[in-house]
Image 1: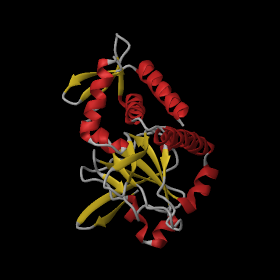
Image 2 (image 1 turned 90 degrees about the horizontal axis):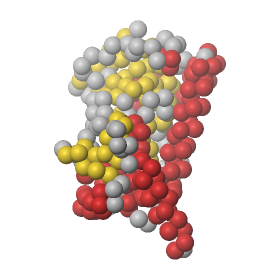
Image 3 (image 1 turned 180 degrees about the vertical axis):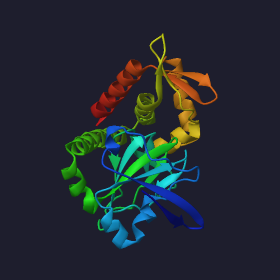
Length: 264
């Protein structure tokens, strides 16, 4: 079923999928104009209640915001394809990743009733499709399908791992630790193994984009990448393409983290 909504001055179309979306079935076609942001979707309360047990599929172009602070609360988002960058904007204008979320991973907006929560921003790192379920109807949707329940539990486990990794990164005073773990995450989602054991990150990423992900600046990222290249941890492939040596990067992260612990 399709229905039209209006996001500002732009008309958009949404596709409501029947149960089975989480099994990897083909998504309902979404027109070139991006699907409306789910944050604005449930404006008609009556229609929303009728769709509570349904998943709405929405597509976003690379760099397009899925929701920002004050938006998206009350919805559960599941990545169907692509990759979502969930991040926070710091008081000094820098930003830092809360997670890089790939297929079958879930994310939500922060609870606005928590007075300490400033709200997160979800952005499509590449062309991305997400499925959205109203949180009030999630229980009914899960009861309808054990496969959906399994997908959600698996996605939550992976999201918790991302958050725990983030906490460890923030404890490390060395920026290269945050940079290395981010490169490892990017290689998992966009990696192309090569014969020499390295993994090429197929999605071009600029030094400024990397800085935005780790709460740093472009100059520092460029310097750290140069140091990593000298040590054989990464290799520049030209035009913002990077190849990483996963085992060596992981060893670097562990060694740097242990050095930080010993210095306390």
